Length: 350
Length: 250
Image (tube, rainbow over all chains, first blue to last red; front, top):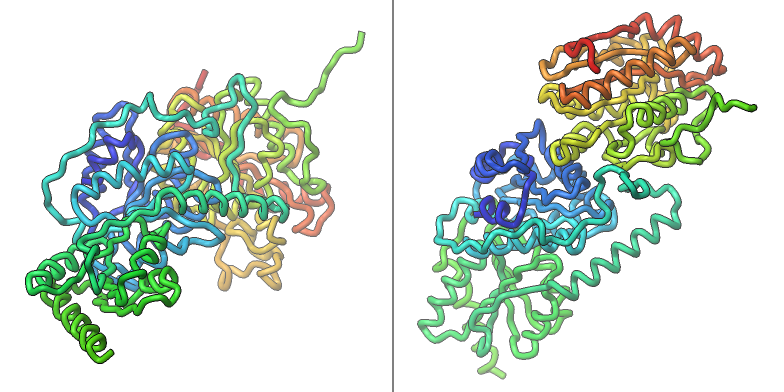
């Protein structure tokens, strides 16, 4: 799904290295690029080489993408830091698996901090998108290329093994007309009839590096203002709202459907952008929601962003299953049930 | 009438080199700039400078420049060249950059036969960081991290990356030269010219390893450093055409 969407988004350069659970995407790109005259697929010798090839292709003006899974994404962080510093657009797919270390190949959400806190060295942010369905996977992949070009910054799609293996019907958006994309007046294609261009990340002069950092910071502020996005489900009358993203959000939705059947007023808040985090929308909800339940396939990472967003205005509870364990909707429904009844009891006592 | 016999090459910016006296980088920069003009490829050239002393190459060479992370030149160049196959893409890298941290990127770019040119400047030391041992430091040679000289039992022996690259099927032309004498400088220019021509003809991976003196970190005078290249460095890294699958390229 990502592969086809990427091609339709105008991706013409893909470099990757084999790692489970995302090899289907690499194989898809090999076959999709082959018939395209202007398409390039390179099976790189390493994750490092792959992300650096993407740097080169991006410098040359191509819409470029690489993909990997958790341990491989750690290796790519060097390149992601350079992409941010050099203001180069690129799309990076992380199909998260259990960790740390080699971990396992089961779905996990343990890379939230790494993805949203920059991951590599230096003072930068990466746009992070978290799809929760096949259709959204396709749509957000196309959006990712637009964001990358518009803001000249790397964009990461944070999925997991479950997302990666899913089969769902998808309606693909029409292919982008490459000729109609905005020109890139910064790209490197030879200084013919114009002054030579330099794309660098070395700024030995501290005043220049500071200015560059502030420039990036202003850009990140703009991004935060413009693209923070979340999806809600039955939050209008909710006494309790579950906050989850990606696969965890789908499981949570199943749980909410079950508890709604027995009359519990519970809703779902699903961040679609993890960075920028949709903090205003959560703060808005806190006006009438006293309890939030954060559910993650980790020991609690997005939990920190939820707490920061709420500024202490509501109670935040947490339920997590790390290590590649996939909770069932019934399991989450039980957690919701007990929290919900505790809240009702408290209200009666008051 | 006065006749102009020497001038600044068109593709060299009007800035003063920051390189130390007796360093080979300024000579090699000049040779590259002259060739960009002579071969009429400056307008379509994209250079990938390294991390190291030549990191500031973009202050001197007046062509498009895309800076690579340390050692990743060949990977960045791969992305550039595959996207823009009609342009001339070359990396400029030191021995630490290419033969230590960037070994994998370089070997695999050569093995894939990427149609890029690599200018590999070998001065046997990490210059910019203050003179630590490089993969190419000679046995017994002093550096800040090899007290008493490089000891093969402790530090390993000099690595001949160019020979390793010659084994890769995709490499087309590899030559080792030096810039320690006028004769060797002329040979270096001929070698880089051929390397660019190999790329222009679309034949594949070309590399010129240039032995270059580093008087500052070798703690020698420029004259002694040039002599050291002749008397010691070329004994381990002999000047020669290491591989030539291209033959005569026009």
